Image (cartoon, rainbow, N blue to C red; front, side, top):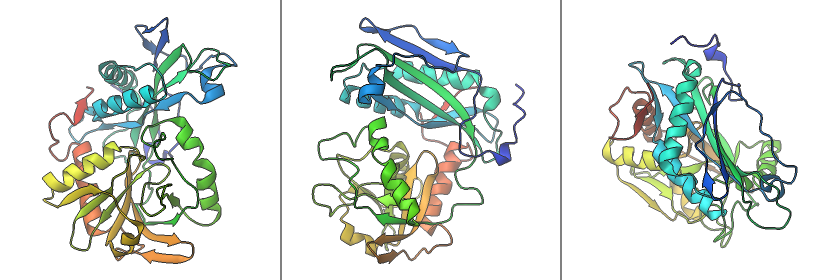
Length: 341
């Protein structure tokens, strides 16, 4: 299979239209058969539920070319499970996990020419999403929905290597107790946009959100979970009912324990503890781990011993091990890599 004539090494993290996408429609209480299409346009009512009341959920994942030449994607079953939970929380029909994985596989396979070659640093980003598509004027769930999957080749999240970033403690709240912070809904990201733009204007790369009830515990950023390393080498991630259950975070915890022999735990992390950690990172699909060098709390700086020049040593081992698994350089746990072809 011949690859597209793309300058893989100079791809940014943006949208590039590919040849095929998957579409399935929900009507009269059931999902249709679904299938691939070349049409990238979405046509919906001006009064569609997604436009009026933000009834939409999505996922983010990647497809890679491994060292031995296979195209794979990483733990798509967990993305499917998370979308099931997200949809149920917003009173949307569940698109079954097995169909989700099949749709993702079909879409990647149809766009195999856009999967960047091994060693290029680029990947194929995969975006499954679902939205209310029929007219809704009263405040209620839509009765018709569309599930879609599109792909786009993207460059490495960090060009020239992952340099530690500076984040601030935000005065904004990301999610309410008993709210929707634990699901991947568009509305959560919409409300984070002002906070991230404001952070950038003030010279920060990201926001650290604290729990909105007590403002004493670390939650997450607008789009990634936190990962800390203690001075005695233990990996710690915050536990909360209002943060997104990151698949990357869960995978890193497993890698820490089973591959690196480290102690790792998920627990409540109080902000007062942060100054005592040796390393800090943000984990998610796009970058895997973004190292954090400094946190600024209303003028007070918390500088991690790992510094502002490179990842801390344990964070680096976690990053290299997980990316090695994803790229086929390190043996993956059973079921982690879904081989497309």
